[in-house]
Image 1 (cartoon, protein in one colour):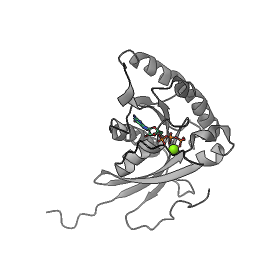
Image 2 (image 1 turned 45 degrees about the vertical axis):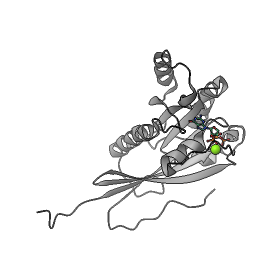
Image 3 (image 1 turned 180 degrees about the vertical axis):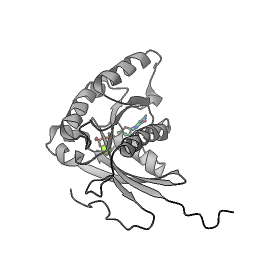
Amino acid sequence: MAGGSVSECKEYLFKVLVIGELGVGKTSIIKRYVHQLFSQHYRATIGVDFALKVINWDNKTLVRLQLWDIAGQERFGNMTRVYYKEAVGAFVVFDVTRTSTFEAVSKWKHDLDSKVKLANGDPIPSVLLANKCDQMKDSSNNKTLMDKFCKDTGFLGWFETSAKDNINVDEAARFLVENILSNDQGLPHEESNGDRIKLDQQTVAAESKSGCC
Ligand code: GTP
Ligand code: MG
């Protein structure tokens, strides 16, 4: 009988960035992941949008992912430092049908690593998403190159995704969260002002700083 057992539930709030060039599908990936929706219609994000995904990670762990959907045009602005603040993970997205968006990946990655770090000074975990794979003609010879690219540029890994056909979106998110959690467990927990907040079941903790941007 389970009666009387006290279940200790951990809750986490992670700020995760989604960055990459204009029109690569950042908003679409988030919409697919959070709302199971897709639209062909393109409306460029202005500045930044937010979405929250709540994951029942296991029976003792709840993860809230605060997804920051940063407009592609922001690479040329000077707000990214503000947007990146206190993020604990990132997706960098490119469009497999447009080489220029892949070429920009290193620029985004560099921007990211130069502006945000984990508390221990390491780069925040990041995953590369090769989106719109539903439109890809031949992917067979990419694997080794992409693995090497990730190693050289400091990505944890990469996934071919399609927001349209719902390919690998959940898998990529799971992979990133696993990494964030493993960093988190390796670090001492401080009741801090960060986005990484651990709560006891009964503890009412401050919500993330809202509307700061
Ligand atoms: P910005 O907000 O301007 O930075 O663009 P974004 O990266 O948020 O792109 P968005 O999600 O708005 O998608 C741009 C266009 O690509 C839209 O017309 C989407 O329907 C389309 N799109 C996004 N993901 C996919 C995909 O996986 N496959 C296909 N075929 N089209 C996609
Ligand atoms: Mg967008």
